[in-house]
Length: 271
Length: 194
Image (cartoon, chains in turn green, red):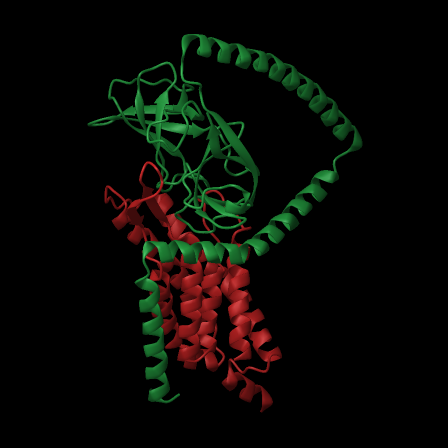
């Protein structure tokens, strides 16, 4: 290979890399969104294959096991329907009382169900990709809360037509204002960079040194900051430690991020 | 050119495939396939090919993984602040530097040696993870360098897995090169024909 070719190829490389490195945040977000859109069909296909394989393995369960499971689910379904009816009654009553007291009507969130099609492959980030994007009503700017029936999952970041990246609360960059149920303690929940598990743990920081939290106490979103609604379960206290300046609690997440398959995105609120 | 296209498609497939391989218990070690293919390309292709692979690989990786937080005004109309942890394109530089290092060993690879390169692929993968860790540690407040056992496992483990998988990947890719008519190890081919 002659020197001229080497010089030309290195120059072209440096030029192109320079163009990429000097992209502004909007250009960067557009590129990320575009690339996510490009790979999403492959991620969806891979996810479907993975799901089919898992279903095939689960399909090998014995018939009596399935009958038992079906029976249990029917009972659970009836229980939930009954609870739902009761709650509807309470909701109507609550609305009437609020009206009578001239309270501002509480917000009701609109949820969009989504399926996880991929999990982040990098070492230091905790993100997932879901099969819903701005064509499905998600905000292209991101920052929309994602949760399950068990508790808080994270928030959207890069949003494409039909896919979106969700940064999990187990990620160090996802900070959530939280309070501890039954106390006046407030703090910030954020993920730990690495812990002695496959999935990083989360911790509640900036508590008072005298907080004295007990294992098993619920940690809920406080609603401060405006991204996450208040009252969503984040997890339970595992251990509390008083540090030099503040208190820190290790949290067991309410959601098991390793087995998570379906989530809900809060896409809007009706007043 | 044909073999370069094959390597590029394989890198893309590896990037997709990585999403379906969970972290390895108990330390959360990641299986990073794409850098391994990039390193193979650095050995099998001449410098321009290696640089092109590094550019595409680094760009794809960053487009998918770079973390950027946008702070909007309350009415969501104005962008107030942007917090970019690792700039889009940094992986291109890292891949190119490591690729250039491996490219220097190309004459040895062409003579049929692969063992040193498998080890270098492992070392290179660990270096990528380490650099990523250093860069985001610099960007995250407070700047505290924690190097406990778990962090080292994640860095070294990724390299170890890559070093163990590299011979298999190198063998398969060498075979693909042979099928596509590209001579990645011409000296070995000459020795055989004798």
